[in-house]
Image 1 (cartoon, helix red, strand yellow):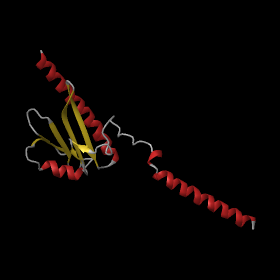
Image 2 (spheres, rainbow, N blue to C red; image 1 turned 180 degrees about the horizontal axis):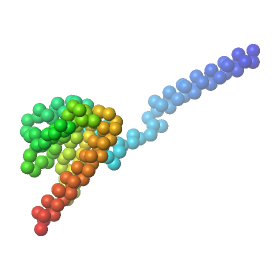
Image 3 (tube, rainbow, N blue to C red; image 1 turned 60 degrees about the vertical axis):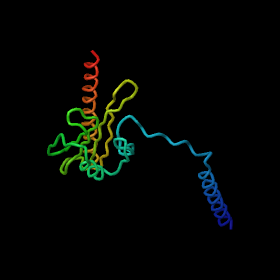
Image 4 (cartoon, one colour; image 1 turned 90 degrees about the vertical axis):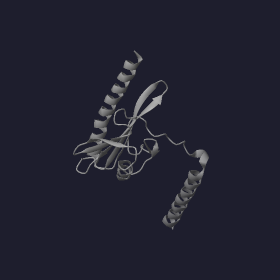
Length: 161
């Protein structure tokens, strides 16, 4: 009998804990504030915006921007194709992987953004390919973006003299 009574008390305790947890989980006062997305580097989860527009799957972005009026193809290799709003002085560059590239499908957006007195190159990546391929792609484009930023900084300095 003791064992049956003990099991009933345990079951009642578990039910009470479950009910209490449900009540507290619904209580907005006890929920922590949402944590903002990290800004240290591009990630798939952080890429809710793609060049200031709604994001999506990489294939959707490739289709959307590859056929967008006002963009010109500025580069093509066996791995990538890139489009820009202005081939000579682009404010935005979209780069997409092609089939066979290790990170495919992936879409990269790099654009110039004015922050105070500075012009900063912002980059967003949506990579739906293999994890290792996406990691390599991110590293490669971080280097390219740093080079673009240096070029922009040098043009600004040269224009200011």
